[in-house]
Image (cartoon, rainbow, N blue to C red; front, side):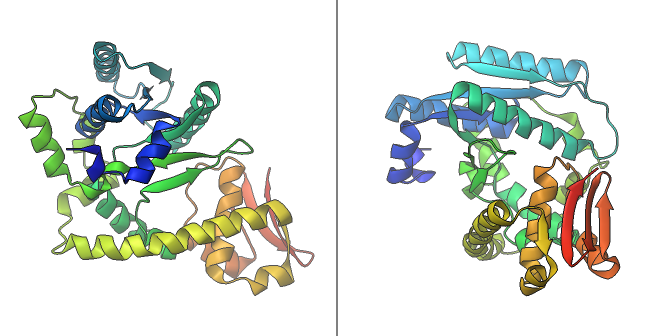
Length: 305
């Protein structure tokens, strides 16, 4: 597959002007993306390195994944950064792992001057995420699924971008392509376990016309990007203490996003959901662990204890 089918000419020009980094787990999706990056390097001079996160949750299997990735990168002369984590398989582990990876990506971005990170999310991931978010009552923001281009901000550091160029491809195509080209990859056994919600959704999900759903979600992404930019601008000028009259003048979707923004910025790894926001509206106060929001003295206060 040519890069022209995944990126426009203008996107290619921008990508080739900056340093990029592919998120490489060793699984089939990220390996497929890795080989695409190699083709882009040969055809367009695409400059990229790789990042691997070893969470240590599967013991020897995790170490074998790392070994596979190290060998793959060495074989193709791609610089690799590996971060190790000491984690235990407890409740909320997936959210904690995502938060730690984001923090690691920020460190890599600062040290290596990375402008773009590339992730191997594909169409199946998109649809699964859409169903899961709606099941959690995530509202408008959840109706957009996974964004192809996502601007990331971590605390007060500079912006960088997460690109998902494989969203136009499904898992079947990826696996068939790897098989045809005889490309080896690793299998994460935890992806087969019914312990995790995503795995259960994956096994049961049947959408008769997925392209229509994808098209609708893509339209919403433009609106969502506008709202995110507005929240960022408002947060810089207003901060975590909002006059109640101003708060009440905002539509509920904007209030929810504003609260979610500050919880995330303060370090909350638990995903804020609509049910939490409804509870805050009823009680005038709410907390997720050390992260609080309350209505007091004619203002809405967002803070961490």
